[in-house]
Image 1 (cartoon, rainbow, N blue to C red):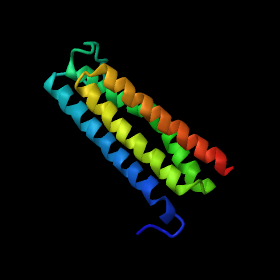
Image 2: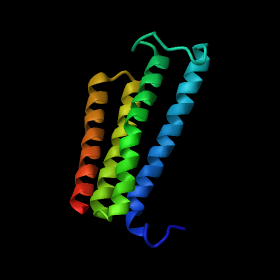
Image 3: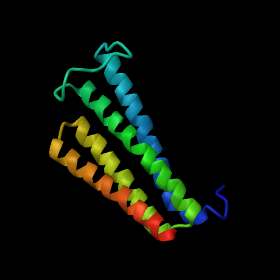
Amino acid sequence: MMSEMLAPYAGLLTASFVLAVLVLIQVLVQDFAGIKAKHVPGMPVMTGHKDFHFRTVRAHANTNENLPLWLLTVALAVALGANPAWSANAAWLFAAARLGHMTFYYLDQRLARSIAFGLSLTAQIALIVVCGLAL
């Protein structure tokens, strides 16, 4: 059960939970793609964008590169008492954009992947602004 202090941030936290599930899915897809490709763990994947395993590795790496900033801004939003509605909107945009980025990367749809990345970056900037306004 969510504490009363966190209740206004249910949307932000739920979207972050969805993001956590997406990260787990990326790990599993990457692992199964690596097993299918008979990839030696720990070795770089050098095959290029035509290879599904390469794309799964890159999609997961890109998500990992974006997580530290996202986690920091989520924590700041809650700690600063940032606007819960705007925080939730940014969080849902981020989660949806990361789902799109992952899906479009898997399907090798480069333009759509770039647009999804841009939307996820926009969501991060929006949450930073929301945090800044709460200072």
